[in-house]
Length: 328
Image (cartoon, rainbow, N blue to C red; front, top):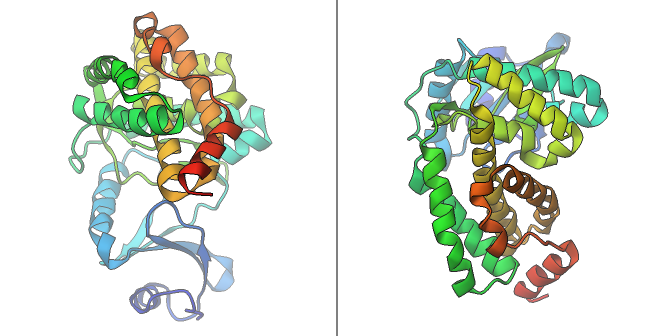
């Protein structure tokens, strides 16, 4: 065995369950402090190992609870074994649905349709693991956007940005009145792996009850995927979701939820470079603004946002402003 990368407790755990003949390769992690490894077994089989540092081990129990709730309904990687610090799962490869759409648009669109169906199946699960979304939660996300995108990044005066508060409150309260279903919370193409022709959903431990179009908006718009799908395919997939849920009134709710998500994401994409110096997040802003604009064309009741919310974005100018904040 090779254990150059593994903490000692993970070495013991892995050896107990797969024997002594294994090697590992550390993988690129996500935004958390969890560590991920691919485990290579004799004969060519592989497994995935996640290791949780002490400060986040409560998240492992949360993950296990979410797994138990979803496994009868969702296409998720099988958990083989777990301890207080480690989880061993089936390996579903590195290829994501997002990657496939970039490489083969037609095949990607076909599988995005499968992902819509998988979402409806996922929603059949029941879980009381995390608190449901609330109007205050949605509003506070938008307040982060007002602070970091509107005021700090785009330079709108605080007294002017205050005009957005009642509009943000109205939007938050509106989507909090939508029908609620179980939400993955981060259901997008980079959290859906394609392995042996099947889809596998990962990173579902933050699931909670929320608006019935929340995950759909994430799937069809996050990370600029709509530029590849196109508006017509987006609406076609919204219609397919509507058919599966037997609800013809989804389209308006979809764009309301999408508007809140898109505005919130602008706050995230601004906060990361301003507070952490991660300038590459600024590159994601133009596609997100396109999403906001798309929603405003669908939602005349939110037209007031155009008068105050800054939709004209220049990447070079924004980069220069952030560098100025950093003293460069």
